[in-house]
Picture (cartoon, rainbow over the protein chains, first blue to last red):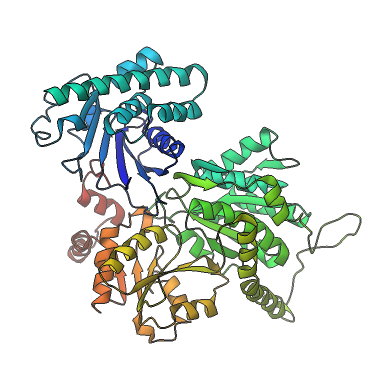
Length: 195
Length: 417
């Protein structure tokens, strides 16, 4: 599999950097090369934060920020109209948004008209995290959704990465949230295929 | 053992495997994760016989390292940016006294304007302090260089600075092969100091030396660094045999064999440069890369050989000698056999500005066309600079430059990169 680049947008405190790191650990567990790094700077709670993850079958030498992502994970939909989150995303890219609303309701229905419907996913990740972990941290759940949408990593490896990052109840809660997000996205893609 | 971990963590674990006896450090971004991890490891008893000393400043950190090393302990510290400047006096003392301290510098810009992001200004400001300076290209090389640094420093009785790009490497999570304790023990013998403060055999260290012998002491410091040049390749080779991978040494060349243009750089940007060079090679350009690992001592002969028949040299550097241009390129010119006008300086990546393939490719294409200026500032926002200059022309009290330029730029929070 050739180079696959992911950009994660969220806000300080939402675990954006941790999400990129967990994604790289999951890919590592699949035997792939992976590189995760944050866009440094506004390390303040609530400020827009970006983190990156590259996955490849060979050593990754490139150190520039991800400017042409193959997939976007948006942890906070309020960023959609504040930050140029879609910058560099190709038409065949993936978009995964943490929301209970639709792309139309978020005001980006027109923008994604040309995209493959099976690449457009919404996951109620905050709700899943609240239910399974008790805190509104959507990062792990979104990685479960990412696994289902892109098929680039397995849910098993995502779960392993989550258990390496967290421990005990928090780990298991996040694994449960990721698993439910995985099923949610699988269903969502199935519906898109039959639409 | 293969691990997917943060660069800082990888370095901390490697330092732990080197069995340090005293670790003293004061936290500063982007070095913090390294010393935090080491603090946790010492507290958990994972590093046997090691004392972790919280100090009140970087000046104290280096002073404690000097004391520890003079008492015969294997000493380690880490810093960055203003922290390195704050300890500068003690940094010169460590090398002047010949104490083999190992220090990580998580490279970061120097203010003002205050900036926490990566460039090489901090390490370059200390390039003539008498320490050995090694620059890591990847996290794997960063951890390997620390193991080599203790060996190298203690053998020569010289301090070693391992420079790794702040954030770009320190905060990147990527695959590293972590050696075992027995591998490191086999490569790194226990510290046998050349001089030691021992109550049983009292000596003093740190005499005042007047004009009668100061030159001679300094000559010996230079001579020692020249000897390091001869020994470093051998130790890197020994490392390769013991650990099964190429790390360290004086430098690395990439696709230089038939290259008529060679890009010279240090540190993590080399990966992006190599990817760019591969693309250009596919387009038929005869271009290669020379990565300098050992910046001090400066490997003159090796650089001269590597640049060989190249008729154009582009030195990409993350530091600026204000009022001159390049620092690395000035070093390169001293050992380039061709026309010194063919050595170009490209200042890039200052204060964390991303160095992209697109920008490198454009700049190198210009170089191949023979149109690259002697000194280039990669991706300089010329209209922004022009506005600042116009303001100064138009009014005497033009105000603070940094604040003005930020106002001109407007909000940057909406930008992705």
